[in-house]
Every structure is written in structure tokens, then in C-alpha cells.
Image 1: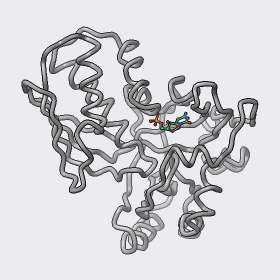
Image 2 (image 1 turned 90 degrees about the vertical axis):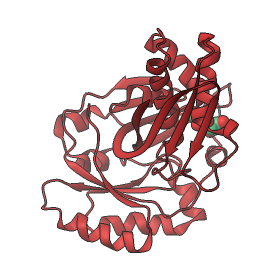
Image 3 (image 1 turned 120 degrees about the vertical axis):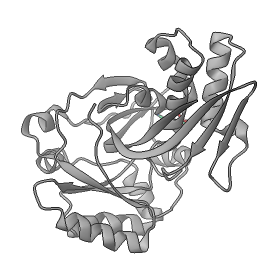
Image 4 (image 1 turned 180 degrees about the vertical axis):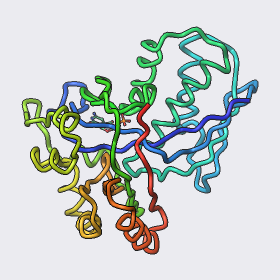
Length: 287
Ligand code: C5P
């Protein structure tokens, strides 16, 4: 039996660039792995089966752990199976990449459990067929993500001097319609922030104001769900140095400097936790 933690991610800034011929969009974003985990168990089995702790579990065939296991089985031609059990903590449809993380964890786990000799390059090529965030989770380190999600440039961040407060108000944001609402054309172009500035001066607050760092999905979601913009402002009024939406929503996050003694963070946490049960204090995973 193998037991692994499968962590979420946040996006610190998300630019949606032009629409591609394959129907996807080119992106530019800083992805950070964070300390919010699902727990996955992998046991040898004749078939591939998935169980979870979620009440309204979608049919197994639509589960990303199941799809990842099938994809690896087909690619390698192995006849081994697995039972995967997922203890779900990461909110779903929340812009935190929970499903994609589970798919990447499944690929890594089955490489070991099935004793498969497969290169990282091949695993990455399987990963991108499962979802555009899945390749990032195979590396699982701070990364500038480009292309449709498959162009990965490791971001050599030595420290991240912030605690992160996640506030998920339970609004489900369908990714496909969020992309459609942006109405991007094939020749759309936009400036992208130079994250190396952040590496050099270490202050995310300065960096983000210099580049007016944003998540392009915010205006779309804020128009439909004004509460999200209120949460963003409230995070700032509680003393967050920076607040932004993650992914295609709807989790809002605030960065609280490690320099203060944590009081601001604690009072923000208590305020939001009373209203939204899916409120978490997390940290960036650097290695
Ligand atoms: O790859 P994933 O399953 O996460 O994507 C879901 C949908 O989001 C895609 O089918 C596509 O409509 C949209 N998408 C996009 N450009 C991306 C990633 C996703 O248009 N880079």
C-alpha cells in the first residue's frame, strides 16, 4: 500500500492571452504549491477502482484519479490494477487544482506501485492529456506556467515570506464558461509581468503594484458574484499585503507578511472562518 499527500496550488496572477487553434488559451501565471492536502491511498487490485469520502461522488469514470490510472495502464500496456481511495479536503471547482493534483499524484504513485520504468518527459505528455494543470503538479515546485499549462519554467524562489489565507465562499465557477466569457481572439496580446522583479526585491506588495498584477478572471466573476470582490477588499482591510482570486475561481487569497506577529492573520482567519467553513491558513511549499 502507498499513501501520499496530494497538495493544492494557488495562482499569484493569471493572464489569459490569445485563443489557440486547438481551442485552448495561452496562459501566463505563477503557480505555487501550498500546504493544503488531500490524502490518497493506493492498493494493488485486479481492476482500477476509485473510492472517495465525497458524498456526491461523480461516476468513477469521470474521476481524474481513475482517468490517470487508465491512461498510464494503456500507455505502458500493464495489466496491473489499483484501488485508489481519496480523502478529500481541497475544495472542488475552487481554482486550487485539487482534481489535477490528484491526477498527478496518481501518475507518480502508480509509477512506483506498478514498478514502471517511464521518463518524466513521458509522464508529462500523459499528464497534459488529463488536464492543463496536471503537468505542473508533477514538478510541484514554484513555477511560471505558460502555453496551455504545459510550458513550465521552474521559479527558483528561496523563500516566500508570507502566510496565505484562503477563503472559499463555495461558489462553483465552471472553467469552460469563464474562459469563453473573456472572448479572447487568436491575435489577442497583453503585457506579462516579469516575476524576476519579485525574486530580486522580495516584496510581493511592491512587485504586484508595479505590474498591477491581476487575475484576468476576476472581472468576469466579480460581475456575477459581487461577494468575491467584497472578500478581496475585506482581506486587504484586515491587513493582507495583497489579495487575489486563484485560478478560474472562486477561492480568494490574501498574503499576510511573516514580518508581523500573525495577529492580523489570526483575526482575518477568525472573521472569515465564521462565515465560510472552507477558510484555511496555508504556506507555500518551496521544494
Ligand atoms: O485542461 P482542463 O481540463 O483544465 O481545461 C478545461 C477547459 O478549460 C478546456 O476544455 C478549455 O475550454 C479551457 N481551457 C482553456 N485554456 C487553457 C486551459 C483550459 O481554454 N489553457
